[in-house]
Image (tube, rainbow over all chains, first blue to last red; front, side, top):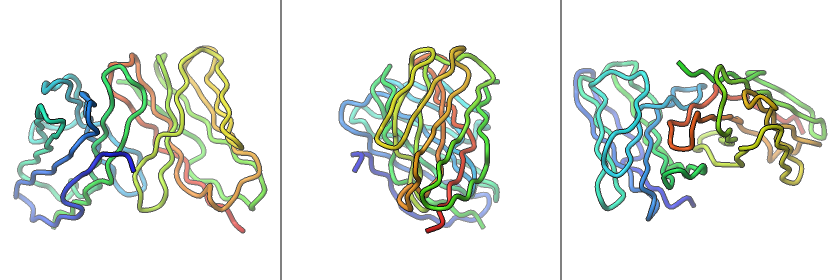
Length: 112
Length: 111
């Protein structure tokens, strides 16, 4: 167990809808990253939050947004869902400057 | 932008054979990390390498970081069926920077 939880486990949405995914980081971990993992591919970096501010972003459009809260929880919001957004969404937490990331079990999002 | 590549994409080995996956970054890294993801699971941290030319061992697994800090390898000796999964390398330009993953090497072990 990594101490990182995510909800929901699975989700089915329709194209054009909006979705919010949640992550609860390991206590004391002030850095959280979100990844998108399509089937058979490596995790693609979406963005990173440190002390409630975004401090790194991958090649994802603005309709992917996030929040980090003081209680080590965070959210990933995706607006105007597209079919290609179907993937496993992973959050990972670590201490700032720390090298070991702890991944949650992921949320499997299906867009129809 | 920063890219991390891995070869091979897939490897099928007979149980007891050795296995090696190679990782190459387009930029110099401050550190490289290795993760293992079992089918249906999430990535699990294995190890990090930070020094040029560093070699670390975990039982049958040997990890190396290149002298130029742009490449790395993972070698498994005498594979077992429990080694099945996808092995990812991931690199950072600084320890506060985003972690960029390679595409992974999927290992199948035939009993």
